[in-house]
Image 1 (cartoon, rainbow over the protein chains, first blue to last red):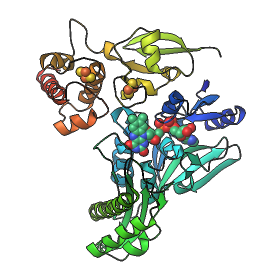
Image 2 (spheres, rainbow over the protein chains, first blue to last red; image 1 turned 90 degrees about the horizontal axis):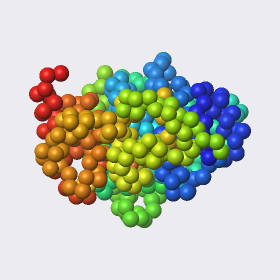
Image 3 (cartoon, rainbow over the protein chains, first blue to last red; image 1 turned 180 degrees about the horizontal axis):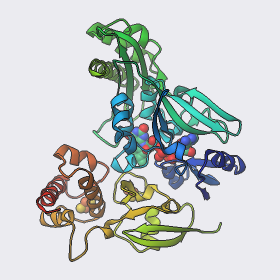
Image 4 (cartoon, chains in turn cyan, purple; image 1 turned 60 degrees about the vertical axis):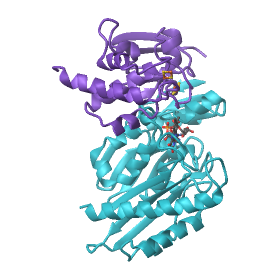
Length: 286
Length: 160
Ligand SMILES: Cc1cc2nc3c(=O)[nH]c(=O)nc-3n(C[C@H](O)[C@H](O)[C@H](O)COP(=O)(O)OP(=O)(O)OC[C@H]3O[C@@H](n4cnc5c(N)ncnc54)[C@H](O)[C@@H]3O)c2cc1C
Ligand code: FES
Ligand code: FES
């Protein structure tokens, strides 16, 4: 296996294109485990952590741009980002241990394409746009279009996710992410739900978006959520409908972490609780 | 495949080594540099026995390639305290009997030091979450948490 650590996106794309079977290396918290177990044996790893654009968090007129290789600890340490996107930050902060947080990136989490990846539902709720560069130039796609199934992505050969753009937020907006794991730390989600809300001046929900995770081959956009939440004040009856819709949209599997029925039930409960947290946060937001 | 030549800093000293691309930082610390205080419990990021500090961030030595060390500053357990001048975390682990077999201990001490460097006054909950990636099969964790609290108190009592 070769190792390269290019300093520019162009060099990284060229390296990926010229070496067949090369893989991007960000924090390595998925990839190194796969190398060790032999489930991955790339001819080369292209370390993208020396490329400035992949390592920066910037606030622009378009919103927050988070470099794809920024690690979780850098996200949760960034006060302005945490204030604007508490749900995305808490999802990033849930990945693994302190040690894993020192390395694990959003790009790695999304591109590893685990159905249980914690940041994907939160990024979906946030309407994050993935900015991608490859041999055929640049393109931007909604984050939910990256993973296509467990371990599979829509990225073409040689493409790199450079950053995720979280759009500018209207006043009275906030998000939240919750997952259920059998322990309090260091486990894989049984289900997860991210909720992103914007309120009117009187506290009525004006905009809503919900992502759910670990209950289908990829994280899902909960299409029914805006119709249920918008125009309400997040009352009990609304939340009950949201929970039911989340359970109905789920297409979970039975495994040692939970049965199909349990996952449907839990994803509904999580969506409901995350909606309440996002609602309370949005009321307090500027 | 030719070996890579890496120049880095380990425990404040400039260090150079040769390694193969798949070798982890943990492999090189232990097998090439002879720094065997850092332990391998799992090799997959789950146990924290391999905890090291790289440019101020706590990471698993088993989940970092050694070639990535170029230009970085790495702290291992050997760089924390000295036999005749233990770090307060080390002293507290001894005094509070926060270890039994000792295999997890270097990882816990490195992790606890990284915590106290950024948060000199952590709550018990903060300590437990921070150390959630460090596994101990012997102590039941309670004495470890007490030792970290004890070290925090000692460090605050000391003139800076
Ligand atoms: C102990 C432990 C606990 C964990 N706990 C959790 C958890 O609670 N929740 C969770 O969701 N995950 C968890 N994980 C999995 C992992 O930490 C995350 O998925 C992490 O976000 C991966 O990021 P990385 O930067 O380490 O990715 P890497 O391992 O570097 O890469 C992962 C994959 O994505 C590709 N890739 C990376 N970056 C890019 C890019 N910019 N463009 C294109 N492709 C790219 C790589 O080629 C590789 O296939 C855990 C892992 C460990 C070891
Ligand atoms: S050896 Fe690295 S975490 Fe267990
Ligand atoms: S003292 Fe034996 S594993 Fe912790």
